[in-house]
Length: 210
Image 1 (cartoon, rainbow, N blue to C red):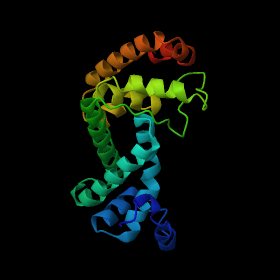
Image 2: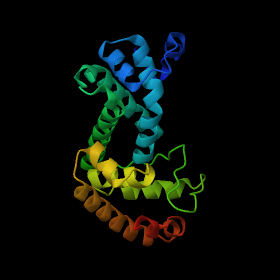
Image 3: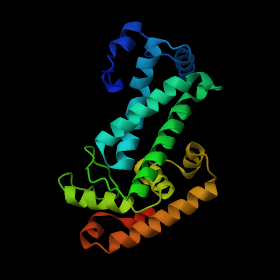
């Protein structure tokens, strides 16, 4: 059975003493299929991908599966990266593509993810209590009612604190499209949350309007 990437020994990185290499050098190492580059790329970028995926999907196990696919694609397509200094964006692009695909599959299947993320996401000035599993399940059920694009835009903006311009770049859409999707997502989520007294006490939807 092949070893999962998350179980790759970081001794590949430490032993090569390459933790301080630049993204450009790392990109060249990946393109050449260097073992140290594979280990270092996972060490450097996996936390970013895992956190974003978990917050967007609401499931640690789904986030881990997606991260595996993301890095397999990054390693396979490393030779196609024409601007090595943009390695981080290159990784982001595969993560965004994977998230969009997963959210579309969920939408088509009418499938809801009721797994609570292990890491708590602060969505308002008042933190959601980590023990409030039912509230988190209900919130993620509402997210599942959004279109794949609206949900991803909302997640990147409110959960990842990305700017509208950054979202437009990583999703390869216009700033105006990002703003429309965000407005649509916020409007619908606010309405649904206000209809649920328990969720309305936890989420500061007015903050999303600013």
